[in-house]
Length: 601
Image (cartoon, rainbow, N blue to C red; front, side, top):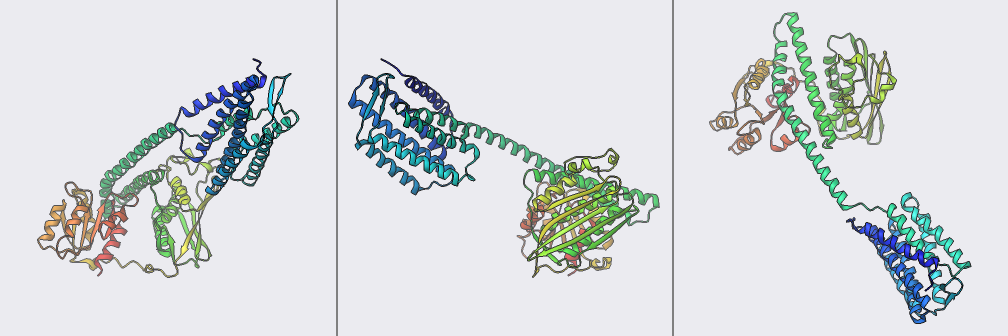
């Protein structure tokens, strides 16, 4: 028995593709159409190699009837493999549909039928010991293969922007090698290398086709779950720490604010101001850590609503003046007069962004001025806010500007005495990104900085909110005789709330648990306002409110008083049925707002 070099190449191709199939099927794969077509190409290829080997053996034995059958099976294999490859190209180019699948199947069936009935003619090269065919069935196979290759080439060119460069590699190789093989076989019909080319293409596809292993995906999912649990645990811990820190901080801020109104020696007043300033810094740190945690956990949402622009910027200016304090700094405010009175966007986050920039300007400027400018560009229903905060402070070195928005980054040893975590600008940048805005920084070291923010908001033509009015004169006589019930399990918090309300000369009842509050209402006590802490032992404020609402005729306003000030809690409490929300530490301006809203009726 005489074996040709081609026969040996078939043997090598068989074992190579068999080894590749074992590797491929040793792991579970994603069950998508692309992978299913690739599996069929694999299996079809190894069947083709077996048929080619049998064909070579039968040609050596020169058994014509069997040789005819095997040859026609080999030609059918060529048609099926190239047809499957066309399906693969259609799939990765997002062109494949049921109609094309059916058309392709019909062509395969018709081609197989024609190959079976068309005349067969074989030749054997006695010198080389090589068998080959040149009958009509063979010529028809060549014709169909050329048509398929032409269609594949056309689709690849037409959909080159959709087919990734990696996936296009085996397609280009197939086209090139098929053209070369066709030319060789046209000149030397006894040399057949199509099967070897198809084996090589299957090999290349193995490294280019997306074949994620299910075990790896499962491991990634497990790792993701662990990371999510750890992140949630971190968020829960920070939320708990926020509550624990805010509770004593409420007492520090509350008593300090009250002391400011007393007749104190100048030195004592300065010390009280220092206590308030330190408390505000601590509160900023707590809020910053909570915000960055929420952002990293993708739990921070943009909540849009209508807001009064004049009220927003007036509040920001007042807060900035407080932060400037006694520093020799002029705050210059220039607000565009054509700015729409009511806009639609995330009022809370916009305020936080601008306040972070103004606070930083006040923090890092020792003397000179801060220019706070707001311009607007209107286009249809949209208004682009262009907010500039320019200072004459310490400035930033050019090489450090890119580090500005990095968490916990302190850029200059010179600034080491400045309090803070370095989270403010990192949070600002992330919030601006969430709101699809942009921020530009210009700075000269030693001379000052200019932060420019651009954000799009919607113009409200028919607002549902009332235009901001001047705050009602805070006259203690407005609330004399009003009755207020304060419910909090912490005795210190009860003292703070009572101390803040003392100037208003109201009748204040205090209780340290939810059941006691319920008993007071059942026993006929009527209050103009109830301040109710939520996180209490035995019965929470939310549970207490639910029971209060079950009491016949109960219609007193209930404001939640809580240190649980994380993102989204205000809306959650309002959804529970609370009328309003006061976060600890209690801000005097917020307390005034609540009193004006519910007691000026």
